[in-house]
Length: 268
Image (cartoon, rainbow, N blue to C red; front, side):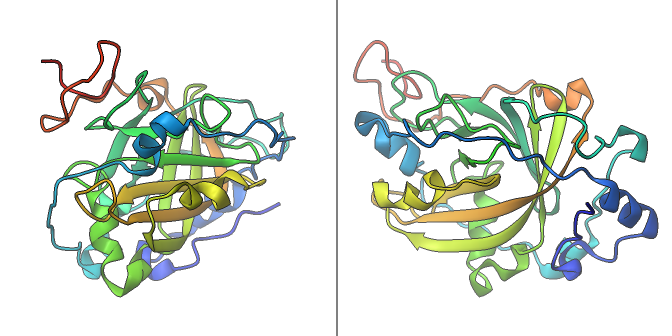
């Protein structure tokens, strides 16, 4: 089964025929049985997952002309995973990259008893499972601050024509089994209330999807931005690419820890 090209070729620019042929050879992610029972939210830590805070920051959107000039490259066709070769494994997300926006972050599990999301990393939502596994029929939900070097480009682009320039962009999610899952952005959801209801749709998903979230403002009550992407295919990745060195850091303006076992906060 052939995978489709990005729906907005104007975002990525014309795709040379070798890349087009390779894109056609990308494997279709194999559905697997997903048990929805047991999906839950830890109420005490809900704000940490729904509301990754950031100080008020401003940045100019990346001009559309610049977006179209950014190249998107794929590895040699020999590294493509044959379609239907094996069942998709439950592999941990380790890195998220959006080439056209310059986003490249390690993906981490939230530290125990997290009081404030980490800086210099994206984190994955804990919802019944320890993490979302790319390739399986469920949503992989990643969040990060709207700050320089993190998810700020998502926020700034969403503020121009409701983020239409992001539709069709490719997102890469690397996993610890040295695979690169490629997704295509298809939906930008702005002004999402910072409540548990914001997660209902993502947690009910029964197909492979990628959800990215950042904050639209500096407060816990600030609205959230969600970007939804669907799978294009899966390709082998070099171990060094799939295992980034970055491990995130406690934000310099994070609140002070209220307990000795808290995470993501500053020690007094």
